[in-house]
Image (cartoon, rainbow, N blue to C red; front, side, top):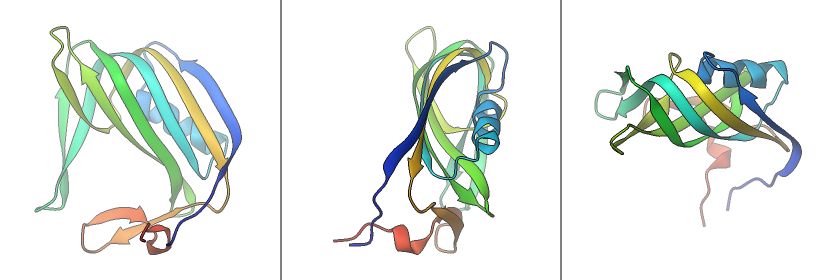
Amino acid sequence: MASRTYTTKRTFIGRLSNGSDLYESIAKFCQYEDIQIGRITAIGAVKNAAVAYYDQRRKKYGTVKFKKEMEILSCLGNVSLKEGKPFVHVHIALADDKGKVFGGHLMPGTTVFACELFIEELEGKPLDRNLDEKSGLTLWAADSVLAP
């Protein structure tokens, strides 16, 4: 089986400022701290949101924008390297005032109302993202594929 083992190196816990961009704030923090491999979780609320979905046939992202207040039900992601720099990949599930849930790939343009954030930096060999021709996505390198 191809897999890697990691231990927790540092854990950052904090909140993001009201009015900040959720994606950009996470990305800038990871770049500033030079986090090369890690895990991201967050909860809170947003004033508006931008999420993306990947069209597997066309191999292109489409963006959906929400111009309303929503709760962050779940915000999960990871940090790895893309072109030698820290890169964050985050998905988000949001609920509106009627309890309807929306989600997708977190994009710039999501404005924080309140957000509590955990970033766990891991210790071990960083994962590099490379273009996967079959999917059209930049995925972790082939040597990180889990297989029995």
